[in-house]
Image (cartoon, rainbow, N blue to C red):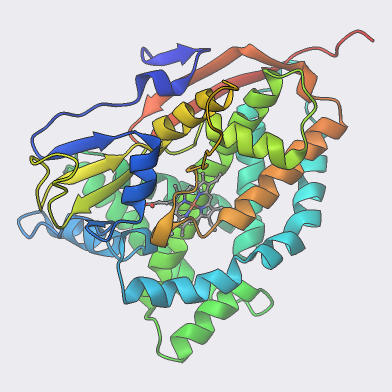
Length: 368
Ligand code: HEM
């Protein structure tokens, strides 16, 4: 745990790389512009045909995730997911998010770790969102999502990680086809079945969409809630739930960066950025800069929150995530727990995907 940091802000030490052909861009306006620039694409690198078979299969599977696909496939997926994760669908879930947050908040006491609370809350939300598979199944999904995400963000793959992840993946596909899809009373598995029956997507495609929904949701929901709580702990001002969520994510965005490939030279930025290069659009740093600017009244306040990305790959889960964070925040505010958060107890470490929180403690009740 030597790289664990206490207190402070995760974005002062965002990961830097300097290998040839790899670029990082953190200026907020530039990041916003490039997120919508057709020369900068989200598709992942082609499958390495020299890699072991298990790795090739996994890389092929991951490259069909919405976040790594491009038109026309991306548009097809987006059309379906837009309905499932609309603002209306998310608003319908708000009472359930509130009820779940309330139950868990009742077990919070002095010394409780709010990072664990945030993770429990995220797990419940993902389970509700994806059609509440029964509890024992859901803990397998979490393990699977975790190992797949570790695999996706790890720079080094080896025989051990390849075969462990491939085994988990196979087991998961069997579970998806035999246990998840047959559920009849839940809109998301029903939606997958309808698309498959109409021949619009294959089983493998459905599993890849499900994989991204699970892995894409869990960690950012967890760290997103901790960011919002930290922001509230630092403030003496009253904030509405939507202001609290906006500022929390602006200050400490759950993702440090989004990866992109360069398809045509970006000569207006540098004559050294050429086709085939990779760029990291540093949304965490861009957001942090915007947040700091917002604290300075003389600076123009044209700030865009990039925590959910922008452009064609803007987060599908935006509405669900916002509803979850707002309702959970409100429950904790109503229980007078926000003023008990101890920001000095914060422990976090930097991971390739972004800062990961480990500890944020609830202090004793304040004397009246
Ligand atoms: C606070 C919580 C969340 C944050 C900060 C967040 C952030 C992001 C960001 C930055 C992107 C853009 C990636 C890129 O441009 O390469 C993205 C995409 C995505 N997110 Fe989220 N996300 C959150 C929650 C969720 C949830 C709850 C879901 C599940 C419904 C989800 C599903 C997705 C999917 C499927 C994409 C890919 C969209 C596409 O490529 O068109 N996210 N998210």
